[in-house]
Image 1 (cartoon, one colour):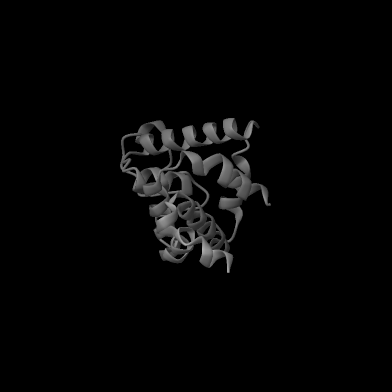
Image 2: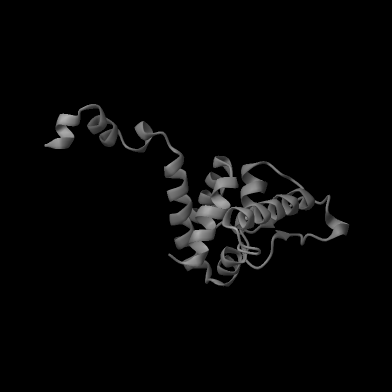
Length: 149
């Protein structure tokens, strides 16, 4: 498995809310121009603009901004920093988060959107209760004789 996927799945996804992942999914599907590569937020996270409203954000920042209703550059930057710290802690490697962040920033946009969308949809599917994943799977689970046939 590529390093970026491992960091995404095991490092970042556990700390992202379902609302955040759903917001990111929608942005990836629709090629939302507010999802930016190469920066954490627009405006950039400088001290002089900490209270300004966010206009655009990277994948992680987008989850906090649109999914968790954070509003200011400072709030989104704090969310981003905490997510990176927690990912590094989960993975047991200082700066492990860089594998995902570098991939996100450096991958051509169409490829990034396609590959990250698959990962976001996988994460969302794994959060669904079994009976919401597929009515067919639920039916088979309740009727083991059908599954065994």
